[in-house]
Image (cartoon, rainbow over all chains, first blue to last red):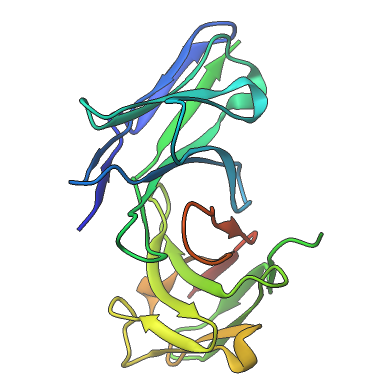
Length: 114
Length: 114
């Protein structure tokens, strides 16, 4: 079975600082990888996804993530944090051989300090 | 294009009462998911439908939970009777076909059991 580990359930950064949210997955075959964001009282919204091809993926709101097969990682970054980035972030995987099943990490709550 | 619609957004009931949640997925999306999300946690799959067929309901507490997806479109999730521990957010999501397609989430229903 697939699994997703998000290191750090809470991350705080200053406004304008680099955002780094970590995600590692376990899979013998590189899966499809996703990052979602959830604002209070809302559903999850897709930030970006990796399927095949270029390992550096750009998403909405200035976020990007890099797929590193050797490290089984898919960390999310943003060069400069904005107050509006404060939210819950979830990493998810979808195995190529597991049909339409998604596996989510436990989430990382991002706080942006003014 | 309309997103995933869920109703109600909020529900407060007393324990042992029944409750039902409704979901209308994005038009044409054959896969529908119901998730449970506890505070500070990632979504946990309850049931997944491929068209009308429930293909993964291994995590659905079948003694009190039931779901249906008539005609492969709308879906209803029911709890009867509700318990205090059922208080959570219930998320519905849909996706299109196989492969790297992401899930689209509804806003969720926040259930409070008193």
